[in-house]
Length: 314
Image (cartoon, rainbow, N blue to C red; front, side):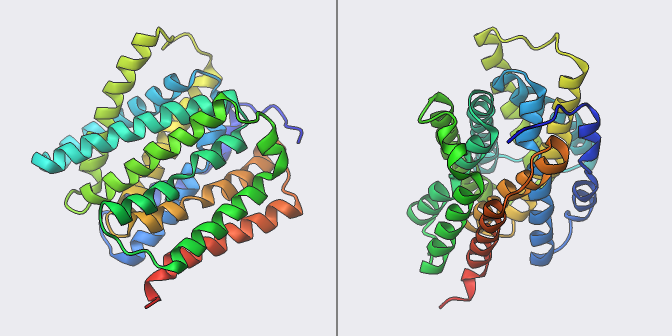
């Protein structure tokens, strides 16, 4: 699949309006708002792989600036909100969530630079496997057969979207293995967030988890001797979009959803980012969806419906 060479206007073409609107409204509302936030979050996060690839910087560096730029917005916002600082178990869960997400992004961002973005996105989204097992083993969530059938349907659709070329482009290489490992930490983040968000507001959780992740990523980048400066204007533009659109807008919305919905349902819904990323790649990168990819997208959406509606199964 041939790609065009996008410029900084590509960042402007990704409209962050849905992310901004839901970020303002999600501080209030119930289950209906939680599903709306989840949809907006998926739309925002779907640009992540594109921004990482186009920024062209080492994976740990793009992960660091994703956290740092987000933190520069969140910290003043949290300080002005007058919210209470979490303590005890809630604080540790919040910090752990930030560390898990940082580890996920270190591996996933690096895998994107080593293998194809489509392969890294698919393998990095194996989190529902870990979330389902963790929710069942640790939190004693009861997952019906409908959930597992929906999960398998969604995974089959993802494989169809990527196709055989996505799997064979790099083989069982280093990038693929890093993407699989990233999915484990992604699942750990979702489970931790579910527990922490049951008693902490979205803004407080995001602020403290991002702070923890930023410190970890700074230490890691310095220890590896990776350059944190000297990049071009295009790289900085994509890094800013990665932080403000995908992380701030996307994860504010997803964290809100996790405070009202089960992690197992949210994690499978996030698989839709594979489909949305493919759709965004058509106008922005010159990639065009095939019939196979459209059919695969339909399977992903069907799987998501089965998972979200599994509560009605007795």
